Image 1 (cartoon, rainbow, N blue to C red):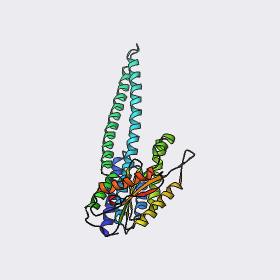
Image 2 (cartoon, helix red, strand yellow):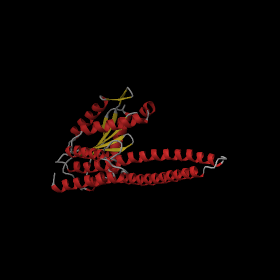
Image 3 (cartoon, helix red, strand yellow):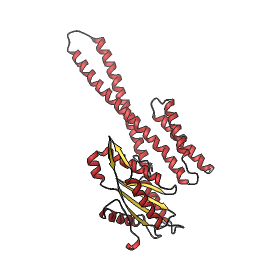
Image 4 (cartoon, rainbow, N blue to C red):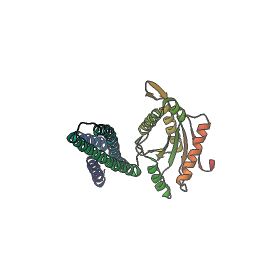
Length: 307
């Protein structure tokens, strides 16, 4: 890893750690220790020969901040709800005292003081919620990682494909795989959307383990994934696609004691110098359509002009 890359990575980690601390009302040592431990693991997993791994590590720090902010947001919402309930109960108590014959001005004054304090707390909590909500939205709009699967998202794909197609010529072959989970709607209807989310995470983890460092996997949308395979020929591309199909179909996800079997269909194509992101993905989509109509759990290839 180059010195500038290392300095940039450490600066990213430092800035995100400060943001994490600033976002907490009462940060503690355990939160900092956890963040640093995760940072060490992220850095250890960097492939020094692959610059993109450094960029992925930077995004991982940002994504970790987003998860902390989201958890904090949930905590403040719960606090706010409790305060609102207490406020309503107290209002009823004050109203009941006002109609009593016994004069309790000092007690009522104390209740009013508590009421005012609680109202201020609710207002403060709402301000924090609004601030955190804005921060989370900003992070989501600029992050290149999918929050569910932790792989690159559609935004990162658009940037990558645009840069790729801007090059007049590549020095090596590049293949693209478009993958779609078979019968995903049926899985959601049978087991629920939480199970569906777990399947997407499960598949993303399998794909990352199955691919080389130079290959890239994106969540294309919904239950679709897109893989870019660098420096391989057509035969090797087909071998990798078949291996992915076998890997996914031979593994089971267990959810609430039930084993869920999953298969995928794949459409493949090769990059040509005159391709745009749209033409490249459209060919892969046509090949995927063939795989779906052909019985699913298979791979088909679509080349230029249908060759």
